[in-house]
Image (cartoon, rainbow, N blue to C red):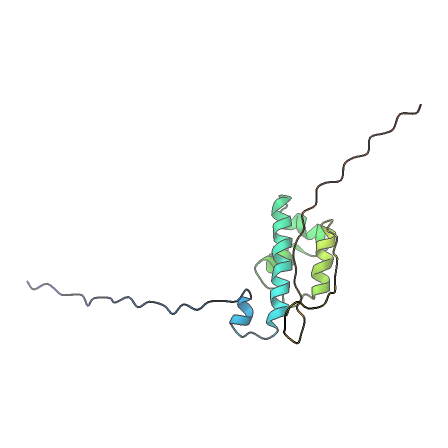
Length: 132
């Protein structure tokens, strides 16, 4: 009995392109900068939820939305949320939001919007002072 030969699979190398920091811009999606900012805000909400070991139901109570909305948010469906609303969700996690405007450091004609988190050491508790 003759053996059937399988055709050899050839592997082609995928095209590799250097990416910018914004995958949405790389994919030429509309409003890429806004979507990237929202993604960063949602990532921080997700991080805070995990850090506090909250369920989605408990996170929904903190943020004032339903658990299914939290689920959709964490799965990347956040186009319908404004940046302002996402910032309000962060403040519900006891986060202060500071918006700073400064001259652009780049030579581009338009400034950029960025988001970063800051870690701050906990404030020392004030011990009651002895009356003397």
